[in-house]
Structures are given as C-alpha cells and as structure tokens.
Length: 255
Image (cartoon, rainbow, N blue to C red; front, side, top):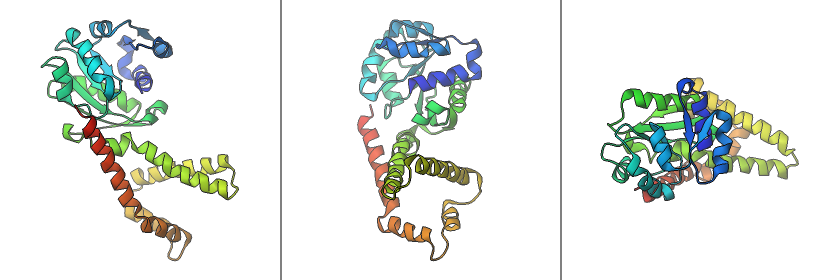
C-alpha cells in the first residue's frame, strides 16, 4: 500500500516541486520506489528531519514502536498521514507530541491500479491547505471522500475490507463456471466487466439499488430464480454481519 501511495504522490500535481523520501527496514522495498524519484533514508530520524508530510504505511501492530522512535524528531509542523486500520488520532498524539497534526486514511488495494477508494479525516491541528494536499494525492489514485473522525472505523468494511468480500463473491461464480465447463478466462473477463458495468450503473444511472435490481429481474425469469437463493440465504444479513465483525475488530485494534 505504501508503494501505491508513493506512486500516487509521484503522479500528483504536488510532486512537481516536492522531494520524496522513504524508509523501510527492508531496503528492497525502498529500492522499488526509485523509479518514482524517491530517495532512500537510513532511519525514521532522517525521514522526520527531511519531511513535513510523513506517511505511516505500517501495520497497526507495529505502529506504536514506529511512533515512539519518531517522537523525539516530531515538530508542530510535521503532518502524520496514517493508514493503520483502527489507530486513532488520540493514540498518535499520545505517542508523539500534543500538537501533532494527524490525517487518518482508509485506502484500499485497487489504489495499486489508480482505482482506489479512500476515506480521509483529520484533527483540528491540520490546516485546510495541508489536508487538501493529501486529499489531492488520494484523488489522483482513484476517488477520495472526507469523513468525520468518529466514522473512520466503520468505513473500513465499506471500502477497506470490501474488496476481499467482493473477490470471495467472484470466486463463487468462477467455481460455478468451472463446474459447467466454461473457460476460466472467459468467465473472469465477463464477470469482471459485469462488476465494472454494474458499478457504473450504481454511480451514474440515477437509479436506486432497488430499482436497478428490478430492472434486471423479469417476472418469472432466470434472475428472480437466482435471487430467490440469495434471499433464502439472507445475503444482505450476511453482508451486514461481515461489516459489523470488521468494525468490531477495528475497535479491538484501536489504540
């Protein structure tokens, strides 16, 4: 994800007069970024000394150690941009300095293809100008939306984790195609395009979700027969349960 974000930064209008730096204990990870004009740093200290905007592209389980290392070199001008799921502004402030500027981001993996969906929020220390710079970066990588801070855990299920849920749904169609002797390449191509087209219908057609379902569902037809299986299995209830479990875990990881 850090690689995808750096790719987005390099492609944004803010990068034309910006120096880019990265640090990772695994130097191979930083080497991959050299194609975007990113210079390697040898430590967290060097990153904090060189950079105003510091992206915390780390797992929630290790962020405490990272912040404690960064704290002595944090200034009131530093802007932390965290993509660690469930980690709160309050925790980042408590581990650095009281005046810390913090922007929380929940991105998703399609960011790698420039088709990400990212939710952002920030604390009151961040200026509008600073926030808009980061917002622009994530808009370059796809679409971005601004949320209240108190909804940054709940949104994880909607855009952060949902790609995995969609892939699992797709797996069911792929397995059905295989069972019926349909070439996997053909099935994947058609189903993936159907996802793309259906997403466009959701965003661009002007119809509600229920209206779109009815448009595909001729009385007594094949679609209704298939929908009956989903209704009997209470698909929407399963989706809701998955989202609630996702959110619960985010609060468990929260610090």
